[in-house]
Image 1: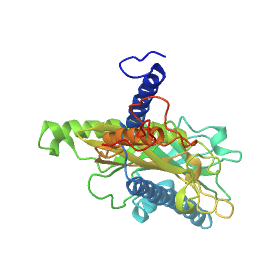
Image 2: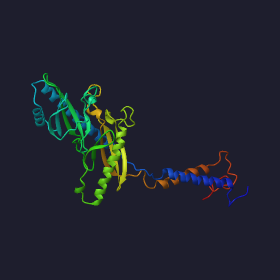
Image 3: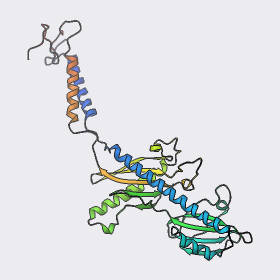
Image 4: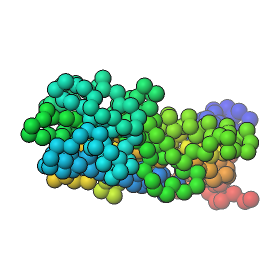
Amino acid sequence: MPLLGGIRPPIAVLCVLILGLAGLTARVLGPGEETVVPKAVLSSQQYFAEDGAIALRASIDERVTDLERTAESLSAGRPVKPERVLSDLGRTYQKWTGTTVLDLESGEVLAARGETIPLSWLDKDVLTGKRALTPRMVRLETGDVRLMTMAVLDWADRPQQLLLASSSLSVPAINLGPFRTMAVVAENGEVLGTAGFEQAEALNSDQERKELSFLHQQMSRLADQAAVRTEEHPVRAKEPGSRGYPGVSGTLLGGQYNGRIATAGYASLASSDPEDKPSHAAGLGLTVVALLPVVEQQASDHGRELYGLAAAASSSCSGSSRRPSSGRPCSGPCCACSWNRAGSPAAI
């Protein structure tokens, strides 16, 4: 077979394949384009969200228990005027933003304190059936969302009265630390309350205000994703709760800005013991999201591309420079062969 530049055609093809292998290896082992966040950082966000969900669930269940106990205590004694009921309730507890006593037969408002509670959401399904008198999420005319808690005042010689109490869904009072924010999210992804965000007026530069706007956008975006994921049953969830958490929890990655990437943990409200101790809060479909921006890290170290090229070249050369198994030298000259026609290693 005629030579082409001193190399037989099959050998030329082999050299091209070797170079292709070297390039492919360099591509695979070279620097990655994806950003990596340390697992410990993500786990920390998930644990913060779980702690927040536990605290919020306990707070909501406590409000329900307090109102029910108050109604039971009043119903066990002599009838009390509606104004007196609300006055005593306000002195004992300061956790409600508004309270109302309603006549269940006529629908007439007998007394009211604090912010006005809308009544259009009250219907037969709210007052009867399996979910009667369970807490509800209600939007006020101002656009704010309130948690409505209900209990019945029942005296023998009077029509039944409904005791209503509204409260805000504030973020649990836990130590968030610097740069961390937390939000309470409805089942449709709407952010109902936040904590940890600085006020734009308190920032000193436009750059800080832009970063604050970026964090608000990321919280809204990640809240939507968390609400979708927490709809799954904990057993079937792709990211089941860690540390034995009874609800659904996990982590999310957001966008990047100014060298930092938004990381988030989320957790749904769940009863600590669903079988023996059901939770009213667990049925509201709420999720807690914890957000923290962290410095970006590359997926691989600089210089792995050269390492990949060297590895490919080394593997290809070592394979072609091996003496034939028959013990005879190659039949023709080869640029990658270290054996000459005499059967001994070529001098370098």
